[in-house]
Image (cartoon, rainbow, N blue to C red; front, side, top):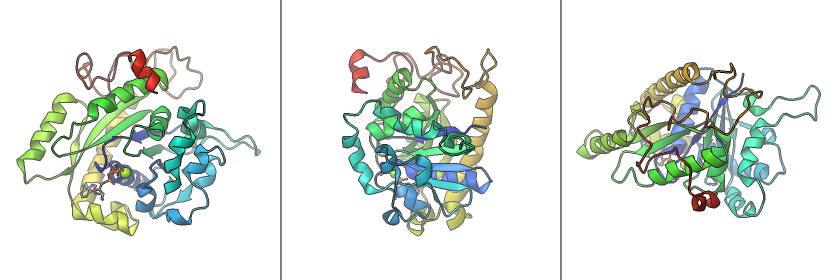
Length: 327
Ligand SMILES: Nc1ncnc2c1ncn2[C@@H]1O[C@H](COP(=O)(O)OP(=O)(O)OP(=O)(O)O)[C@@H](O)[C@H]1O
Ligand SMILES: [Mg+2]
C-alpha cells in the first residue's frame, strides 16, 4: 500500500505551514497512521516542533540533497509514536545555491522517496511504500526546495492566514503549481486551503475567509484554525498539540481538520483514483501520456472548473515559454 504525499506550501512567511503540517501529521499518527514528516525548511521548525534536536544531528535533509545519504538513513523518531521525521538543519539553506547548476535538481526528493534499496537482501521497499501519509513542510519561498516538494507530491495543501492581504501571492503560487504540473509532475493537484489564525472577534477575518472562498469555492476546508496561545506555545516544548494540550481550542481544531482531511482523502480515493483502464494513480504499470491525472479539473474537489479561465488563480492551462524557462 503506497502513501499519499502532501506538500504544505505558501511562499508567504508565517502563515501556518509548519504548524499545520506538524499537527495534522501528529493527529494522523495518534490514530495509528504511519506518518513521515519531511522538513524542507532550513529554519527546521517542523523538526524542533516534534522534539527533534536538530543541532545534534549528524545527518539531515541537506545530505540527501547533496546525494551523500539515502533519505532512509536520516529518519528520526519524534515525540509522537508512528510519526517519523526527516529533519533539516540551517545548512539546508545552501542547497539552493549548490544545486543551481545540477541537472534534474527538481527530482532529488521524488527519487529519494521512490527509491527501492537493492543493496540488501531482501530489498527494502521505497519509503513511499512504508508510510500511509508523507507530509512535506516547505520553506517560505518558491525556490528549488519547494519545487522539489511539488515534484514529489500528489497534492498541495495551502495554509492561508486570516488577515489583510491573505490572497497576496496566491496567484503566483497557483501559477507555480501549474508550471510544475505541466513540466515536472502531471499528478500534482490542489488538495485544499486551510484558513489559519482565525480571530472571530474582528470583522476582518470573516471578510477574508469570504474572499478566499470566492476564489476557491470548493477547496477551502470548512474547519477554521483559531488563533490560540497553546498552538504558539507547543513548538517550544517540542510537542505537537495532541501531546502538549489535547483539550485546547487549537488541538480541537486540528483534530477536526484531520477528520475533514481524511474524509476528503477517502472521497478522492473513491472518485478519482480509479482510471478507466483499471489502474490507479500509483500504479507503476500506468502509462502516462502527459495528460494531467484529473483531466482538466483545476483542483481535487471542484465539480466545475471554477478556478480556470481568466482567473489569476487558475492552475490549469499551459504556461508560457518564458514561464517554463523559470523552472
Ligand atoms: N493557530 C495559531 N494560533 C497562534 N499562533 C499560531 C497559530 N498558528 C501558527 N502560529 C504561530 O505563528 C507563527 C508562524 O506559524 P508557522 O511557523 O506554522 O508558519 P509558517 O508558514 O510555517 O512560517 P514560515 O514561512 O516561517 O515557515 C509561529 O510562531 C506559530 O507558533
Ligand atoms: Mg514553516
